Structure formats: C-alpha cells, structure tokens
Length: 171
Image (cartoon, rainbow, N blue to C red):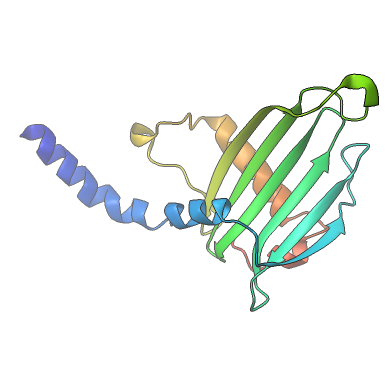
C-alpha cells in the first residue's frame, strides 16, 4: 500500500511536468514518411567527406518546415541527421550512422550493403533537450547524451546553410 501511495504522489507531482514535452508527437514526426511533402535539395557547403553532402528540405502544404535532412556520404558509410518539427516549441533530431559492408567505390569488391545502422534520438521542448528524471530513465542520461543532443541541435538549427529555415524554432 505504501508503494502504491508513493507512486500516486510521484505521478501527481511529476506527471504535469513530464506531460509538457510532446515526446510521442515528436517521435511520430521523426518516424513519419516524407512522401507527399514538397522536397527541395541544396548542397552542403561545409563538406565533411570527399563525397560531399546534401540538405533535403521538406515542407508542408502551407510552406512550413516539416523535416530537414542532412546526408553526408562516404566510402565506408554515411551519416544522416533528421530534424522533424511538431511546432516551434517541439521538435526532434535523429542522428544515424550507416556502415557499409565494404568500401563503396571498389568495383571488384562484390555486392555491397549495410553492415550496421545505429541511431540516437533527441527530443527538444521549448528549445531544451528533454530527459526524464534520472530515477525514471532507462537509457543512459549521462553527460554524453546531453553533449550529443546539443551538438545535433547546433548542427541542424545553426548551420549557415539552413539557419534561415530554422529561425522560428526555440533554442
């Protein structure tokens, strides 16, 4: 009975604060297909690989930014960052690394494919990285998660190539 009481008190105290962040809506937006959205591409100017990169800008029918994707290709794999917007106060960023089975540009190397794909997800509410209270977290919410989230936010919101597209988003 004491445990039940403690859980109810915790939910009453923490519930409203946790509910303010639209994590479910952000996660849905990050997973949503991009079909049907207007897409424009532009080259990445701060090239981080010999193959270069591209920005893919997806807008809703009313012209608002829906999703922004940055792809950086390479011989051994690629990096993808995806920013998906629920509102100016709520958005998410996924950071994906894809490693190939072999180097991409060796013709006699045989068929190629994906050997490994790993993704980190970051949820931003009112411009701040969301993390549940430590006692409820199941993922490691150490300083490395916060640093990776801040790096992802800076890369997707403040890059000179796209800063004008993201200026309405809270930081």
